[in-house]
Image 1 (cartoon, rainbow, N blue to C red):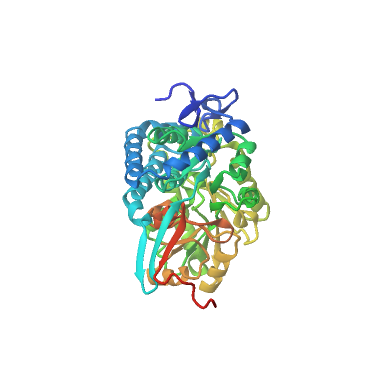
Image 2: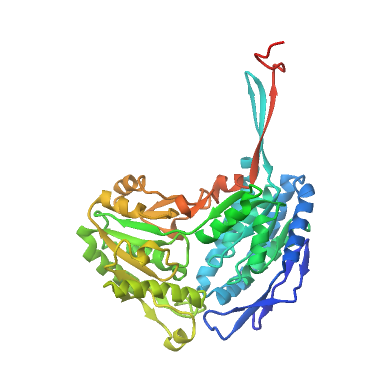
Length: 492
């Protein structure tokens, strides 16, 4: 539906704001094609957006919850109607298959609807009459939220912040990644149009924009999804004014395959393969390390490769037979290939998986054939680092205690998974250091927006989704009305 490059504008105080400088976004499937152009905002324009959000907060926080919900519901309906166009645009700029783009929008809408349906109950005043008097605990809006979002799931990782922030009475300035700025901007534009000017602002740009969004004293909270190293800089920038933070960061998620896992269970094996290679492995919560009980290691590897070869079909994201599209950018391919080459140079075996549907197109685009790496060591970079691409190492373990130790041997702790008999798997799961552990499934297949999501260790601070994700955009405010107004035990 988008035959020619589209042009995205910033949104500042309800108005589209054109810029002199623009950034081109190429099509990873056809890198010689430009999908569209996003603005490169200046520092001054970023400050304008922050000021607009700050000025609007005073009135927006006083609007009724019913009005906020009604406005969000109107935005949801408009996004539903435009899903086909937005999904197509997302696949063109990102490289992920169309079914994957549609799924991302679906998860976004699911969360937005959950937020609308539950926010009144979650954020209502807790009024308590007790022996000492009366106490009212309210959940107040924080202020201006800066949201900085990544390229791998740009829409869902933006709406996960927009919905609770605006429903709680906050205002926002959002900055998407320049590697997938177009489709998410269309979604933000729809939402912003349903809210008063200044409530939701959109800027794009380079590092100076990010620094302003994390250091400006008018910013009360930072909601960031991205890399751990970037988060360290954000925390330093925010320290001067002690800002609230929700940080959803990198992960190096372990999948533990126990000795009672049925390697002949084709559906389970397919789920595991998908949990490694969906979106070409470019998901923070995807299974990135597989550990298998040594007693079933060889048959597991054989059946895993068999399942992968059945499911993996690499090609054009608009081909209905394709399960894995292009990698988002050339730099990511080079990083992942470097990890693979390093492991191979140390004696690991690299097995290519699946089928390339169009070799000529494959060679022109940012494609990467999925691989499994066998024989890597626990301290090899391909095991230690977050690959964020279509490769996964498989390593053996000796017993349950060894498996737990290997899984926890990481600076990260976002998600994890355990595969085997449910009772046995749950017992193991309780010892894993992670924000979420899934049983006999992993990655997005095990995601439920009704429950909190986030990491431990260097995988993040705070939680998104669920009731906790709504409360994350509020300050707890306690109002005490004591029965006895005289101070106790104070001498005359």
